[in-house]
Amino acid sequence: MEEEMNAEVYHERQKLQFCLLHALNNLFQERDAFSKADLDGIAEDLILNNPNPVKWTPISAVLNPHYNMFTGNYDANVLMAALERRGKRLTWHDKRNQAATINLDGLMGIVLNVTVRRFAGLLKNRHWVTLRKINGVWYNLDSDLRAPSAFTNVDGVRVFLDSVIRAGDQILLVTNDNLDAL
Image (cartoon, rainbow, N blue to C red):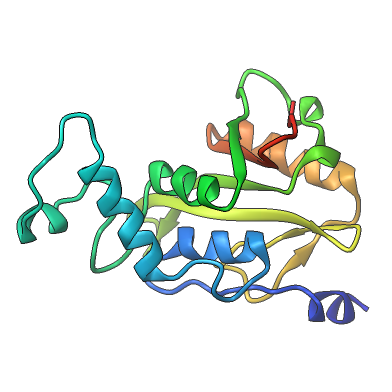
């Protein structure tokens, strides 16, 4: 039965450090909601439209603080700009509050920025993950998972989010521009 539920759920798997790209496409449930070129362009626009602009050169493109041009690894500024382009709003959840304070019904989805350990724990870096309610069921659409993972109920979502809060990781709430997530 879980496979039947997952058949209707779009889920991109992890490639290099393009987890933000995968998280966005999983959030919008579209293969090409965003492309690498879209996110690269957003990161470059962030540099060019900075109040203290940096003159664009091939070196500045490589050293762009918003992404790595070879592997991805986009930052939160790229996430915010990408969501704004699609008429969505991002609200950071206050880590001093438990997940019970989040109005899950008012959300398009949730994006997490979590710490992961790779290569037998030797490398620690950040990873973007999407949670989304699809056809009445909340899913963990982490691109590191082989397949979407359905939560059994809303309490399971809140328990998971509380574990994210306890770990000191970030919870970002995604809403349509005219809705209030809190």
